[in-house]
Length: 95
Image 1 (cartoon, rainbow, N blue to C red):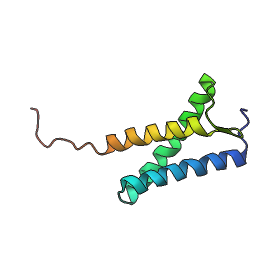
Image 2: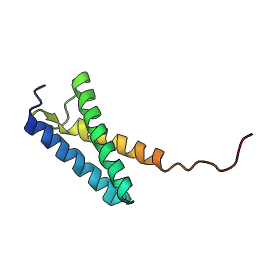
Image 3: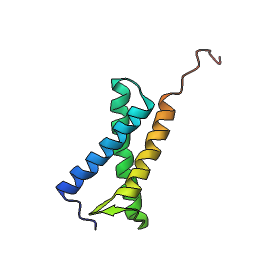
Image 4: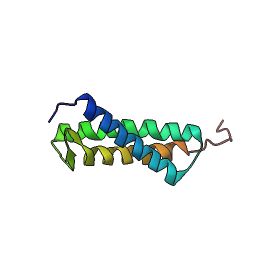
């Protein structure tokens, strides 16, 4: 199940972009936040897939794509990335 063919890579990319788009639809924001969500979703999807392969965890496998673990990784990275991107720096100096 480690054979990632071009169709399975494109399918994985499609799912990751769909998750990023849905997250943007829920959270909102401008164009650059949309691009951020798409990038975070792709990164998290790949990380979730690799963690699933590494640990041998299979959650809803669809062909050679571990959709469950990959989606979980994508959502985790999206939430953490969104939270970190909304932190405002303090204007006051500590000196």
